[in-house]
Image 1 (cartoon, rainbow, N blue to C red):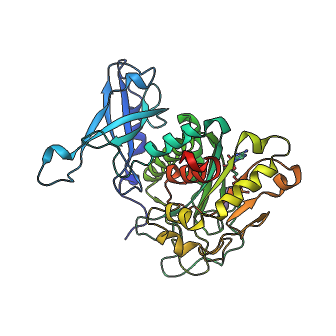
Image 2: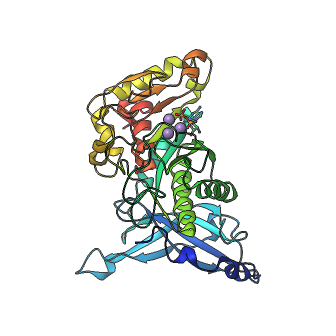
Amino acid sequence: MASVSVSSGLNKTLRQHYMSLPQRGLCQVTYVWVKGSGEGLRNKTRTLDREPQGLEDIPEWNIFAPTCEKDQSKSVMYLIPVRIFSDPFTLDPNKLALCEVLQYNRLPAETNLRSDCNKVMDKVKEHIPWFGMEQEYTLLGINGRPYGWPSNGFPAPQGPYDCSIGADRAYGRDIVECHYKACLYAGVKICGTNAESMPSQWEFQVGPCEGIEMGDHLWMARFLLHRVSEDFGVVASLDPKPMTGNWNGSGCHTNVSTKDMRAEGGLRYIEQAIEKLSTRHAEHIKVYDPHNGRDNMRRLTGLHETSSIHDFSAGVANRGASVRIPRQVGQEGRGYFEDRRPSANCDPYAVTAAIARTCFLDEEEE
Ligand code: ADP
Ligand code: MN
Ligand code: MN
Ligand code: MN
């Protein structure tokens, strides 16, 4: 089987002619939502009469998701636009609208974790919580093998690939660079990128984002990653351990601070938050991947810059701990901490909500 898709081989110069046609003042809006499994995304596009100036100009829409065989009326789901981005594929004035999904009775769909997250973020808003997430991923050919790996063997062992350059080390940089630009154009708060430890494995970072913004921007960054990868004919995998053996897995380190942590003497508040996290390790592991910790079992082994899934640990500059205080934060006595446990395929709404609940909500508020 070929490693790149058929549509990536279509004539892109020809495509350019159609893409540059004027669109008579009309506006294409692509609705994007988290699909029913809680992993991955779906999208569909419609025409609006004019460019929306805000969320109120983008109507609700629906999808038909057959869940109830007896009563078809219960199969309708509502798409509720919650954040607008510019569309980097069809360009201004066209938009991408991130949506929440509601059931027929207008209660949040099972995998709509944004709804709960939004409530928690509202309760803790006086702390002004900032998050930054580091999304690791692996590029795969459509044959399921890491992109550019020999089909009957392995590349040279890990060591030279992290933050690398060179044709023998950095596999698929076009995708990384195009994704970065697409995020900037869209208005996603991407703040950096680097090659990772395994060949074809990369990372981008989003943040700092306040409260609910974190999940919104990371999901849209993921949408853009999948869409850019599609253009190039390869697949971006968020599997936490795509290759067994002596190859790093993929996480989604989550960096956290509050206004107190960022101020002079903030280290005290960082330590308090970590103390609270230590008492709820098992609960957090359950929501740090979409399968109650089963995905992270493959990744959090205690090897390959991870901690063991069974124990909580914390330390300054320790990349083998569950939670790390960056060296500079330790030195300056203020800043943020990093929870290294979330899996690459985590739902950022679940992760940030769990952290906010544990660290910033008083018991009686929960
Ligand atoms: P690492 O050294 O762990 O690889 P990165 O540079 O990849 O770190 O990522 C750092 C992340 O921390 C980014 O997502 C950034 O937005 C986030 N970050 C930086 N400052 C803060 C802060 N004060 N509060 C929360 N997140 C922050
Ligand atoms: Mn990083
Ligand atoms: Mn990394
Ligand atoms: Mn990190």
